[in-house]
Image (cartoon, rainbow, N blue to C red; front, side, top):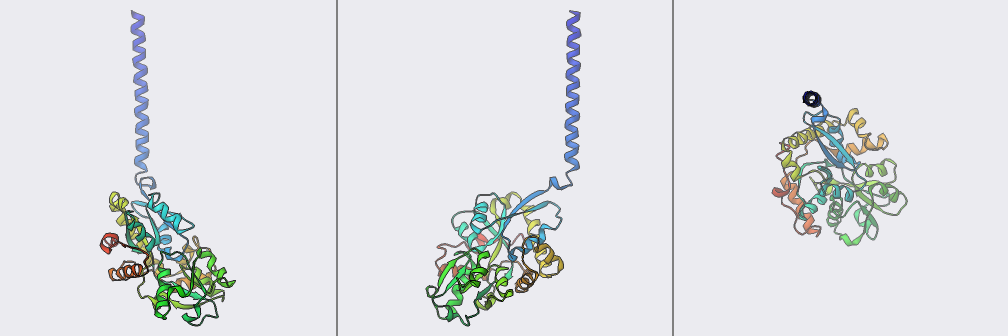
Length: 323
């Protein structure tokens, strides 16, 4: 009996030691988590998709900033369809994207909100040197990046204002990076696309600007910062902080100073002359989505039969985060 009692006593001591060790370990982890609470690990990670274009410069600038409650993780994509698939399926929280693609997704039932512009102006309709007026494009090939794009609408409006029909030219979709070479080789007579691809042809003296976007469609709405609606609801305070920081980054980008060039060069690999020209054309100072401008966009997508039931401004655009 005495031996049994001794054994029980030893077992109890062993159990007590094990419990003490487990408690100390838990406290140790708790202290470590607490010490990291003011560090990066406690911050919310915001995953935002982008294509390497100058229309996303505010995101590049924001990625360099230190924010109190979130870390911005930029996710690079090679094409708009890839980016939209990731956005629509929730693999990323938001994106800088062609607004028409986001409108199309919203029309199809994906809960998206446009919370800011990517830029203002900065789209150019570039042609070969032998094109002197819009009428010279009749029967020629002209490239756009995507059917659902402001670039496609700009082309349509330019032709309409010149008394031509969309069908008067051969409109083809090309990856943006291929357009300067296609123009130089004579495979197309012109193109309109996000920057810096227009500036490449002009800087190399292989093409010329036929029209700036504001000459064809004043206050055109192009790329927008779009967030998933469910993500905004679940992370409202972080979403507000993120969008406000984005707007400030846009103001900083508008200076187009050495810092803007330095940061942008980490995302876009082009000659300084090309980047200078591209940034010269574009504006980042007021990234609010104006209701009247959005209504003009809606009229255009309906006129071109791009969308059957485009989302209303009230249902799709949320300016509360930028205010």
